[in-house]
Length: 136
Image (tube, rainbow, N blue to C red):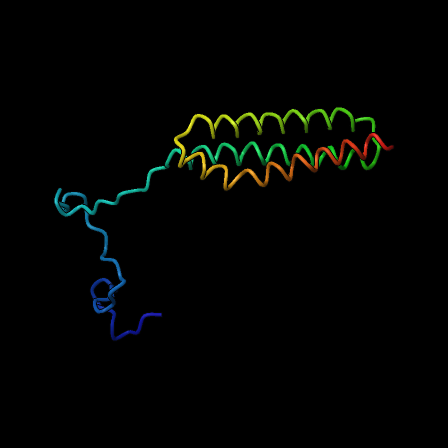
């Protein structure tokens, strides 16, 4: 809440408040030199590849979770779901290796550091699910 002593009667805009923004002006009142320019950070190569890998990982993990649930319940859909999980995992691995090999070494190292462990964990989980299915 802004104290009344800081409010001006004409437009209820706090004058003494350093964080306050001025009231909006009509477009004709702005001069080209006075328009504030804001630079946005652009995505780096690593960011875009990591985003793509994150989407593939999310899909592969979802397929794994569905397949695991169906395998536990021993439903008729379990085999097809395990195949779908394997396919999504292979897509993820292929995109991961492609991202590492087709990038400059620094970007490849950054991608590997962020994604490699999660892919290995998912790979082991899919293998364990396949072993569980074979035992039953």
